[in-house]
Amino acid sequence: MLSRGLLLSLALSLSAPALAEVDEGVTVSVHCMDPCAVVLDGKPGRAVNESLWEFPGIAPGAHRVEAVDPKGQPLVSGLAEIPDTAQANVYLISNERIVTRKGGPPEPGTPEWEREVARITSGTPPSTHPPPPQMPPEKSTVIVRCQDDCSVVLDGRRGLRRDALTWEFRNVEPGKHRIEGIGELLLRRLFLVYVDVPSGMELTYQGESKNLLRLTKQQLLTSVEAARAKAGLTESSRLHVRCPKSCTVRLDGARKGEKGGSGVVIQDVPFGQHTLEASFSLSDRNRRLSLNVPPRSEVFITASADQGIVVTNTRPIGFE
Image (cartoon, rainbow, N blue to C red; front, side, top):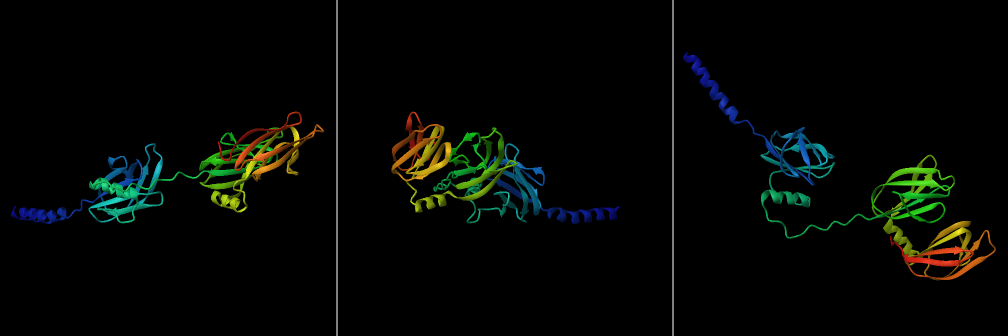
């Protein structure tokens, strides 16, 4: 009986220190840039606020972190290396970056939103310096050329018809857009594709058979404007000439567009005095107009054998 008591006392004395040395784990705080829901190794934590989640009792080492937005769309997924410390902060910056910090203030050079999260959790007064304003993304220009006479629409809207084969769309928002081309002959669809338009670019596409649209040229809009300035075209204008019946258009004696067409868009016309002529295929009459073109403008003109050449509208280039 005595021996059993001694053995029980010995077992308790040996197990007590061992239990005292059991590590309670790391308290991990996961910070999102936007509202999110987070799981660590597939298990949910405690929501501190809409973009901060806490996971107590986590063992040091690599753990899988997954976050989704309020609609359930994936935001970030990857591994976070948890240090052997009492507290750790995990910052979900992007799909490529999951940053882990030990407890305490963030290190210099960390993102502004990370400093703000640390300020809120520590109770530090807000900074007197406002964050720098975010500039909106620059819009782009899309040019589409067809192999035959065509009409082109981008997201259902018509652009500027440069000639029978070429259409231009200005002020296009960055992102995915739907481009559709319809042949003038038999009104058959030539192509229907979706393209990703980056910010601040001029993109030129060539429409091909078998529903293909090939990117043939891309350049920065700033480079395009610089080239135009170097060529002295900064103040030039654009003429839109429409003929109700087939005609041939000449500007200062030089033919513009196809012979016997329905009109033409004349690009890069220097401002000042010009002579515009129109001859008509079904008539012997030629019409002529002395035209004073204003700088950086679009001039809309209708030419007919009966009414002559008439300016119907003038507006600044870029006006929508």
